[in-house]
Image: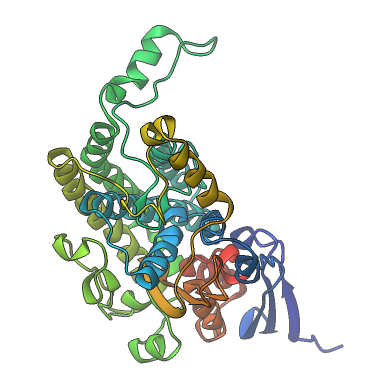
Length: 417
């Protein structure tokens, strides 16, 4: 009996890069992909619809849960859209803090992407290396917001609070003695800014370690070079952004082309690829981590020299200070009204986007003058990237579909929003 070579394979939804939320229907000729049809909607968040019944401030924590690897980057776009509609001025110090944490979030995102992409392609150790640095950034998140992941730290008009003057320290336990604890607390003696500065000084050497493991590794190159090639023209036509677009050689970065907050004062380079393959996109993201580190160092230097307010003094949008609340019943009532009834945004519409770690993340908002959005539309970068999966996977083997999904750095919280 003749062997049947053409068949359809249900790839997932158990795939490790998409933990049960991507179903990929592959049409195969033997092991070669002829067509890849992504089925989405298995993780339905309904964030856009939920926002219509929440006040502007109540919807902010939903942003953290969209792309749950780039939490503060999502908050950033949401706050910029509200500020655009209100015509709100953000204090300079708050803008620097936002830019600093946006870049720390970029590093945070790329570290998880690198560790997971490495595992997808058979490199096991890289995840442990990447998680070592991720823990430090989570400590920064926790020090500033009280939460390790879903920070809700950016607020319309600035940020929730100023940077703390001290870092939380490890304590002696049954597992660790005083000597081990002293070693862990070595770089936690000063403020949060001191801790971030120490991290930035160490981080380039850590990135060198990642490159030692992968960049010239022949197995890594066999799995990534020439896989998922995307020409510059097709990348533009399909709406790719971020490293997916820059990997194809197009130097588009909204931090440079449409700067927001204080990005126009930052000195950094835009890395671009030449071949538009999975390997180039790896190199682009690795270099982006180095450039983000440069931006963070510039922010730390400025923040150490320039104290000041970190949120607008417009109390229709921002709560009064703790001191004011304790001395005035009027201010206390205003605080409760702000967090229960919210604030009203004038009728109109606005679109604000940020250079999210995965690409252009945008918030399009319509207000009818109420205390909640009339409509909210989220422009998620991963949605457009997933639409390109069919084109990128055709002609490759089944195993290469894993590398193609990995190179997109997709997170379904934002795709199934």
